[in-house]
Image (cartoon, rainbow, N blue to C red; front, side, top):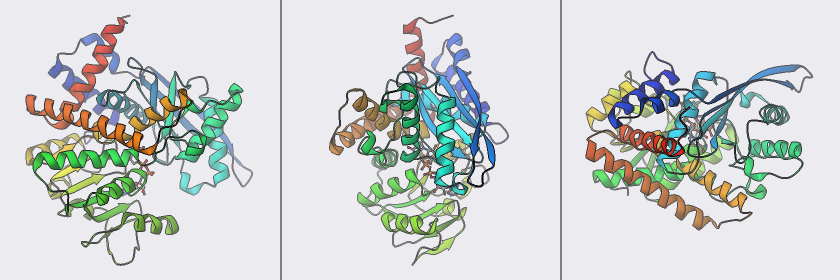
Length: 416
Ligand code: NAD
């Protein structure tokens, strides 16, 4: 988002810009500027000490012209309506870039999951699900994990929805545990997609992946898997950070060892054999590939001049402000934008939904092969438009996405 503007204001500005470039029908543009539906719920939860606490929850459904609403659920203290609206709109464009038959939505609850017990989280999730019950459903709106939520949270959502329906409905959420119909490969899909984009980008600029240095900001679900897959193809992971610290090792970190350390201590900080550093220093490390995989607005006009990476692959949603984005474009940094770079997650979520609807299970190789094909096709489409129109990869991705969404609308003939 622009420094000084809200995330949703920045979505609108981006849409106005793209509308001019693709000569978008103003009636379509007008509708894309508003989410279809916003649901706000006050969720009462009995905490472990016996007191009732009320949490605010959101579900924002942005657009459904290409298929059912689809998007993650975020549990974080900084969740707010403006952010959820922006994340929902980004989902509309993300599902269009990888051309899967979904619209866009997002959910969130203002809470600090790290400070809550498992029982409190379960009660919160079940009540939140019951309160948005009428708005979600396998052909209406299909939630998935995001920051602060995981397969266990999806299992509780599925169970609550199924109990209220009276029969099992695994296809109401994706990112479930495999034992409940989750897809093999879903857990690592977003990070794997990030790694595929990094590989494609490296090829375009003639950067050899073997020995290429990588820094990952935000060693969570996406960051870990991106680091793991990039390490498997020969990259050297030289720095990783999380909300509590940053560690650097120029000889290369083993992502599984970092994860084991984080699982036991709660942070990457304190990992043996590493230099401890500030979280900010990670951005100015002279690495080849930088993967922001935490939250929004971390590459800004304040730190962009220090960024020396040749390739940035946005695992997180909205990590780069427009000012920083322009500066990176001018510097010639190859930026793979979030709506393309992190679309591997929703792509395999779609595969999970298809498997559930067909009561089928695909082997891991099938999932990974299809993910590879989808990501490469989407990357090449965006790269082609970026070259032809002399635009950034971000602008090209939006031009493709908004055109696809508009095309669906015009074919539906839905003008009011
Ligand atoms: P997660 O909660 O598993 O991980 C987030 C990580 O970021 C945590 O390790 C946290 O400690 C770290 N972090 C938070 N603040 C930080 C800071 N200031 N500096 C460094 N690290 C910090 O969440 P996730 O699912 O991995 O999601 C990460 C990003 O990827 C989000 O923007 C999310 O919307 C996006 N995303 C996730 C998925 C998915 O499938 N999980 C799909 C698409 C996009």
